Length: 296
Image 1 (tube, rainbow, N blue to C red):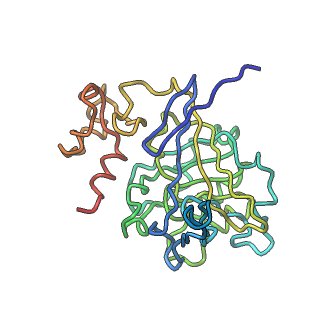
Image 2: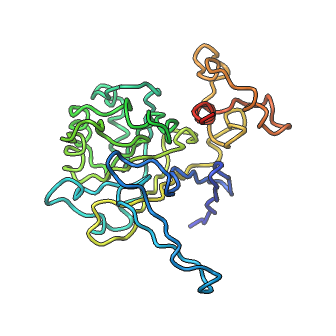
C-alpha cells in the first residue's frame, strides 16, 4: 500500500503536502463566541499557572452543543444512541457538499436533492453549504438561514448515510421548538454536525469528511474538530483565493455567471493581497463577506 502524507493547516487556510490538503471546517471555542439562544457561553478559568504551580492548565465549562458540534440521536430521542456508542470510524467517510446559493430564508425541497440520488448511494455524509457562516458573530446568524423541509428530510433518510452537516446554527429554525427536521434525521440514527465554517474553501463537491467528537460517556452531543481531506490537484492557481488559499469558485471564462463579478471588493481588502499575487485570481466570497461583516 502506498503511504501519502496528509497536509497541515492553520486558521488562515489549507496547505498542500504531497498530494493531499486538509481544510479546517471548525470555529474556535472561546468565552465570547456565539452560542445557541438560551445557552450559556463557555467559561475558561485559569486553574493552574506557570508562576504558581510550574504548569499551566485551564478549567473549562461548556455545553455539549457548543461551537462546531455534533448532535447524537440521544439529543432529542428518549431511546436514541449516544455518541460514545459508535465506533470512531463512524465519524469519518466520503462526503458530498451541496451549494445552496447563499439565499436567506430558503427552504430546501426534495426536488433540490433528487439530482444527488445516485451519489448518495456511495456516501456517508451530506454537507449543506448555505454561506451562513459568513454571519458568525452577528445577530443575523441566528435567523433566516436555509433549512430543510420535513419532506426533504424524509426523502434523505431513505439513504444509508451516517449523517449530515451544515454551516448554520441548526437544521431547524431557531423559533421552531418541535425540531421536526432533527426528529426525522436523528430518528433515522443519523448524527448531525452544526456550525461548520470554511466550506467555500472546498475545491470540489466530493471529499473525505472527518468529524470526531470527544469520547464522552453518555454524550448527547459534543464539540468536534471537523476537517475535510481532498486531493491537492483539485484546485488550480486561477481558482485559489490569494488571502485564505481556498477555492474562490471563480468562473472567469463565463463572467455573466461568475459571482465575483457582482461583488464589490473593498480596496483595503485588495491591499492585503501579497504583491506577487495581485491580479492572478479572485478573492473568495467568504473572505469578502467576512470582511464586510466586521464591526467598524
